[in-house]
Amino acid sequence: MTDAPPTRAVRILGATATEIADCVREQVERGALSPGDVLPPVRALAEDLGVNRNTIVAAYRLLTQAGIVEARGRAGTRVAVHTPVAQEGFAQGTVLRDLAAGNPDPRRLPDLREALGRIAARPVLYGEPVIDRELEAWAQTWMRDAVGDDRPLRLTITGGASDAIERLLAQTLTRDDAVALEDPCFLASLNTVRLGGYRPVAVPVDEEGMTVEGLRSALQAGVRAVLLTPRAQNPTGASLSAARAAALRELLSEHPYVLVIEDDHFSLLSSRPLHSVVGPDHRRWALVRSVSKFLGPDMCLAIVASDPETAERLAQRLNPGATWVSHLLQRLALELLTDSDAVRAVADASTHYAERNRAAAQALSGRGIAVGAGDGLSLWVPLPVPARAVSEQLMRRGWLARPGDEFVLEHDLAARHLRLTVHDLTDAELERLVADLAAAIAAAATPKAG
Image (tube, rainbow, N blue to C red; front, side):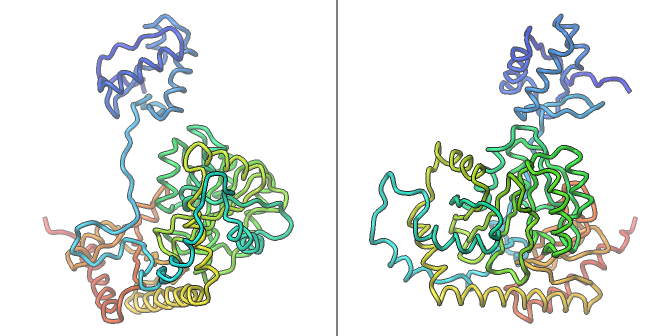
């Protein structure tokens, strides 16, 4: 196969790698080169400019690291195509019953009104500690119970889990570095990695969580960071078993400087124990716990426990921008986390989500759609036919579902799944959904005439 020719005749100039890269960047910014256009082959451009081939290779590497072009092997180097990826949240303007949003039940969130009135007595001025002292004291116990006593630990507060993960990756990686991600993958994590310019490396997930062989392959491929969900993995609902966590921990012990981020997003709501993959001698790690699932998505706050060096770098990433997370928000979180009524509401919500998921799984299994309840806010429903076809059939019956291919990195198995958020359905609505889903599967499996 010969090298692909450039899509259009665009004059690229320069004598150094930086000059050539700057010229291509300018052509892209001006619209002379469009997403998907193929750049000249290395040999051809080197001959045209009278420079060494290594100069062109270096220029294209600079452009790749900046996210401007993508190397496609024999298909050539192309101007990057930045395709939008799916987002979590309600579908705006739909008249369909929304099963795709992945939201907690607002009726199950603690009432903020009294707590808000109790926290605003003292203003916060410049120079205050980044972490509210009382929240830090409470969180030290909470996070130490999860991490254990055999690792040094420091705390950082960020504006939610995605904010923490973005900053953790940025303080460790450069563009085009490889990151191991669960496949299927949580949408926010996938977005964070792609928008950061890092290369996602797919690690399959089964009923016990991230697979050992998948992580081994990713480490052999040179990943610099591993992002995983120890329980209530989104979208599958899988949680790491003790045996799986131990096997992953042993594997990671051979790579102590790979950053390991554990996103324990469902913490206080989870019905499963936490099994960490980080061993006592691992040098770069972080445990992230946001409060959005049990206190509300608008509570943009996460507590990060990490090794001291990672904590220091994370704090430096906060300094140029937000500097600190609102102390009013920190105090509100602490007020709720230590209030008996709010704590009871969180426990009740945990029970509710688990019971409704079990009820839905049993109802679906009774119609021949075998599904495990898992852990989390949603069900991961396997299908005998492509999920896109089933979701289209469900739309005709008044339901909005999220097909599994939106979560896919590499492995096509997820494309035959639906993620359904059903915890707020009544028994009658659940019965109707089960019947409609069975009918949608049958319709999707029926060959079209002609």
